[in-house]
Length: 218
Ligand code: DX5
Ligand code: ZN
Image (cartoon, rainbow, N blue to C red; front, top):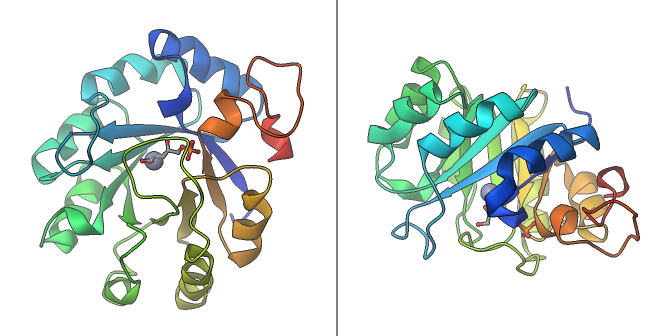
């Protein structure tokens, strides 16, 4: 299914009200809920772990899209799967045994995503196309919400779309996606748009909801 899906990132939501925030964005039409896990080691920020995913699970009817910005990662995969993740995305840069990591995610019963930092090329993916369900192109350096979209990544998205062809692999874009950049990444070939600030902190599109930008206007 290549229709455009919107995945609000709760990194930009009220940390004291995550359950209600998830329900609210789903009520507004969010397709997936994107959950950013950071370890203060792979990225220079710390968020939360599998216990938070477990607590959120009853508040998310649809897909829980868990983005693990942690290294090492393998030892934690089962914990996130058990906590109710539908998709677990790990980073290509998180360790030398990416293939093993992807196998472990699928063995745990989840869809396997692989994220690429802005400085990482798509070459290695050519050997992993049978092993991934989603590729996440980071359009900011991971660690913080509210950063500026890195334009050079549009060419990467296009090249990735050409490499993937008709395979059933989602192209997700994460970082600085708003009403201006969303059409650019969609045109380049992305089908899952993560958006934190644009959804929860208000964007350029006026909207009476507490979430600022109307999700569907992104
Ligand atoms: C960045 C995270 C993103 C981020 C997106 O490290 O992986 O999911 O929260 O937030 P915005 O949309 O504000 O760039
Ligand atoms: Zn993310």
